[in-house]
Structures are given as C-alpha cells and as structure tokens.
Image (cartoon, rainbow, N blue to C red; front, side):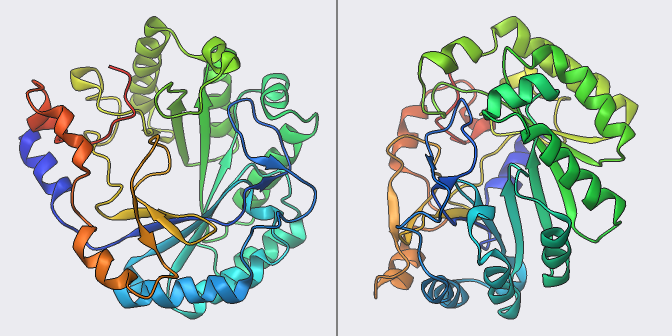
Amino acid sequence: MIRRLFKKVKKREPLQKIYWVATQSCNLECKYCTCIKKDLQFACDIEIEEFCKILDTIQKIADPQQVMIVFSGGEPLMRTDIVELGKEVVKRGFKWGIETNGFALTSELIRKLIVTGLNKIWISVNGMESVHNWYKGHAKSFENAMYGIKQFVNQGSSVDLEITTIVHAKNYDDLNLLHDMFVYLKVKNWRLLAINPNRDKFNAVLEQLRLSNFQFGQLLNSIKGWQRQKYLNIDLGCNGFLTSKEFGAIEHPFSCTTGYNSITIKNDGSVYRCPKIPNSPKIGNVFDDNFTQEWSRVFGTKDDKIKVCNGCSNEKLCMGCCLIKDV
C-alpha cells in the first residue's frame, strides 16, 4: 500500500510549482538566514521586463493553468513592484503566491494583492511575541505579521493563507500556545519545519537552536494530537524521510517533488531542483537560448547524487527523496 503511494508521487509529472527568488534583500534579520538586509531593492534584482521574459519561457515548457509561481526571497514584499509583477503572472494564466515574513503587510497592500488575484500567501510566525521578535531581529515583527494574518482571515478573501513555523529549541515550548492562537484566529493551515543542519546554512546559533532527538519525537506526537482535534490542517514540512516515525504525523508519506513537479529560479535566471541542498546542480538558465531543450532532457530525472541511497533499507519507500535529512 505504502509503496504504491510513493510510486504515484514519484512518477514523471508536469511542472506544478516554481519558486522564484524575487529578491535577496530583506527587512528583517532571522537567526537562520543569510539574505542581505537592505532598505532599498537589492541591485542584482531583475527588472519587471526580465521577469516577463522568464514567464514567457515557462509558457513554452509548461501549461500556465497548472503552474503556480511562488515569490520567495529574501523578502519579496521588499520589491515595490510586487503588485505589477503579480499582474504579469495573472495575465499569462499562471496562479501565484508569496512567501513572506509579513512585516511589510499593510491594509492597502493586502487589498491590492487580493484584487490582483493572489492565490496563496505563506506568512511566517516563529514563536509567541518575545521569541518571534528575537528570532526575526525586530521588536515589531510579531505585531506586523499578526496584523497581516488577521486582515487576510477577516476579509474572507479567496486567498489561501498558510502559517509557516520554523520549530527550534527556543520556540518549542510555544507550540501549544501558537496552535491555540491560530485556532482562535480561524487560521486553517499550519506548516511546521525543524531546523536541519544539512539543509540550512549552519552556524553556531543554529547549533543551539536545533531540536534534540527527544524534542523532535515529541513534536511528531504533538502534531498527531493536534490532527486528531481537526481544528487546523497541519503539515510537517521539508524534513526529509523519517521512516515509520513520520506516518500519522503528516497527510501523506514524505516524498520530495523538487525536480519532479517543482523547481526554483533564482533572480539571475538560474534554475535549480532545490536551493536548500548544498551544491545542488543547476538545470540551466531561463535566459539561455537552449534552455527549453536542456529542460526537456533533465526535468523529472533524479539527481546523480541519489546513487548514495543504493542499498539503503528504506530506498523502496523513500525512493531517493532528498539529501537534507540528517541520518
């Protein structure tokens, strides 16, 4: 039964999601992140005309109606042309979403994003107020993020809202409070990820924030308990294959789709299967003349590095999902 589920997930599928690094600039200083903090748009960010060329190239390799363009960063709301960029996405028939820390969300910007046809927004909340503000590096970060969350919920818009939480040693004790707060606010979706030394750019601070094995096991138990309550749709995010511990803690067995039905395009046009794996091989560049030919050759194929999985007792279940798991 489980093997059939994995085979279904890992079959060659059409492109469904593109993560576009809209900017490397950010307005906060998260403990785990190395993005450039700058008040103005980072000089290397491409202009809207270049972004439109990316969209036009994607139209040649995928059906726009099946693809969501997810603006990530950095902090995508640092771009003053974010609404115009969204309009170009919608004009070409794509869906679009934004991954944001919520700091720059105002009632006027939220209204414009909704009118533009925003489909989904991910807002990060990484603890209750004191922990979140410490983690984000700004005394107003929690207040601003919560304002944005309340606005999207209260307006009853068609935008799909999901809260993302990086779970670490300092916010571990806040998780039940966060769960109850999100239920009270009538949030529907909550995605949790644990800091991972093989995925995240590791440093001494992250080493202190990393969950112990016991804490991670308790996190899985908490997720199972919250799921039984059925107040929130809770997803355990990109933490790699966890064998039998994971079953029951997420909606379906983990199977990484990067390079199968999702890719990442950096702000210089470089295309990668996954930006979170160190030295992840580049598929190509959307600005190259031969990109569409190169794309058809490599998309949906496994990375050669997956050969290290040969002989693993869980290979037939995991099917070489991802190399970020610390095993």
